[in-house]
Length: 212
Image (cartoon, rainbow, N blue to C red):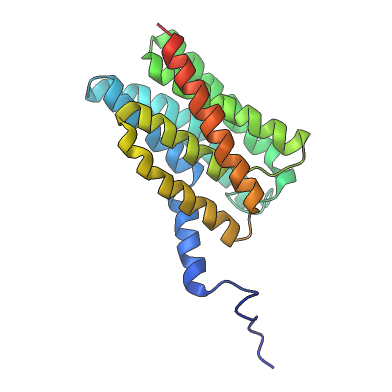
């Protein structure tokens, strides 16, 4: 008897590969590393040195340091993978992300970073705290892929122009991938997308408007 599952029960190999590409290429750590550099380039008037300085403060503390903790834990078997798809295993990764990014936020404030960079870090912290509350308070595994991608798209639209709404195609792609790989439900990615737009994008826009 063949061990192959029926087509309707198992996604095709091509669909799986496409989904895995989206999940990796559009992973939260990729957005959080690249977004600050792209925003910093614009808000510093294309000043290379300041772009690297402020972009890397957010990128390193918000992405690279937490990702190092997550990958190390995954290799030691503390959680299932570097995407930490098990809801109960997300507490330490959340703590690493929040603690590290909070340090970066302080550096931005003390160092006199552009208000947009301070707003960006604050928006990311707000998203992390919301996701933590929903994940463990409501026991609902909200999608970080969706939150980060949707929030980043709003920030890029504000920074470079509404034409970057085209990036919502990337948001849709990564949301589809998370459901296709059965790491999330449609409700979890939809909630994540909404949270990213409202909280991530909303906090960023509000702080840019009020900070001087």
